[in-house]
Image 1 (cartoon, rainbow, N blue to C red):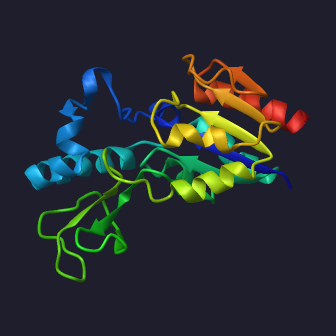
Image 2: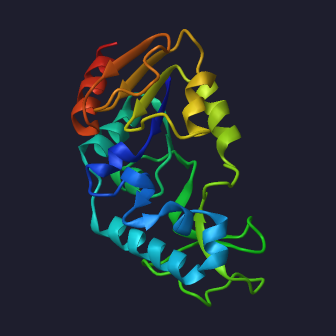
Length: 228
């Protein structure tokens, strides 16, 4: 079974009603990214950060996977599929994808502020001030904030380098280091890009560009992949 690796971004979840991480003017749902998605913002106002992610988590529980998520999950019938996502929601898993790597962390996990290896599932949508790890330190959202290392990047790069087919869906390919994953894919490997915009990677060898939103573009990609 051929190995299909899919890199997904905010565009695939936007169709389900999840706000994109980077909005116009450096705002995310009306908040400055510096205030809610940086270690400095956390040190400055933990309650604001906790509430921000509580609201994102609550919203993520209200929405459903869309056709783009579902078509991608269905490709597991034909390929050894790994999804590498920049998204922090769980819509890929809810759509049925079984191998998902979250580069930027997960809304539905918390982690110790004392020991980053202590990670816990979040039941429901609230993480509150006073919720602590087994060492007694405050729990924070298990999100990779701006200025922090991306722990899963090495794993993702290794997976990308072994792809037989590489698919990019709903990402503008401007957020690094995730955008560099396509550089690990062998030159001869067929690549597909689904995005309604025109990302700046159209020069990549063996790349087929489908200028559509995820739900429409994924249907076309599936046809091409199955016919091959």
